[in-house]
Amino acid sequence: METKLELTAGNFSNAGYASSRIKQILKQLNIPPEIIKRVVVALYEAEVNVVAHSYGGYVGCSISSEGISIRVADEGPGIPDLELAMTEGYSTASQEVREMGFGAGMGLPNIRNNVDSLSINTRKDAPTEIDMFISFCQGQEDA
Amino acid sequence: MTLHEVLSTVDGTVICGESYLDRVVKLGFASDLMSDVLTLLDDNLLLITGLANIQSIRTAEMADINQILYVRNKLPTKDMITLANEQGITLMATPCSMFKASALLYQAGLQPVY
Image 1: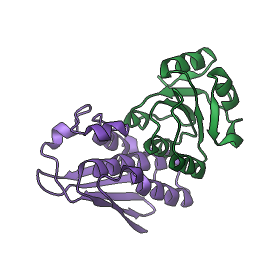
Image 2: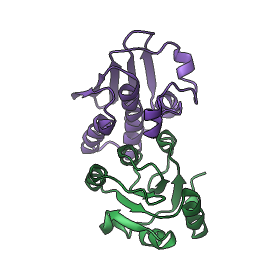
Image 3: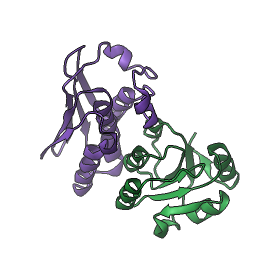
Image 4: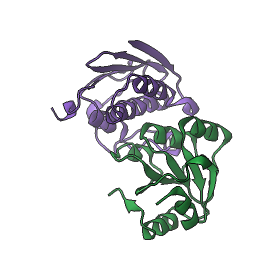
């Protein structure tokens, strides 16, 4: 099953809509709640990142019996220092983002902690692509 | 404790989700930082926050949290109430500060996450 949802830059009132849609789909597929939670927490953080930091992008999901592959991609401006951005507490977020309850430098670490595999392709002044996979097999996260 | 007991403990009012006031919560977490809420593994806790915007409802939805207590009588907007109703989330408000609400609820038996 494939799903693609557009994300609009700066539209905080709609941030979380894509994660909510994916959550509904996973619930309909009877995926265990603890796995759904890992998926939507990672996806929601990524979605907020696109809305907060990028020029806009999309979420693409591919669901199989093994798990869910998610691509969150944007049109830039890219992350100049990914290692720094992955550090808990490091943030470049605006005051507006902080007022939304985010921007404390926990987004990328939260994503990393909830997925079974993570790949981030980014550089300064370029699009960012985040590919993640979460297995539907219980215990996979400890592997 | 039930959400009825939460309300009586903090002199609170229910904004939406009245039909769920018999729900029992064992844990409470007070934060305005939604990324911190998203790190919690426990479900079915009471989120105590001063962040009355749509992201508090979305965060509760993603974190499987079914009840939010807004402190200092921060009132949710119509859009927030609509979303909370769609998700079956009970919204409540108290005149207490986050510190006082947390203290009263802890004293009444609500347990901390950490």
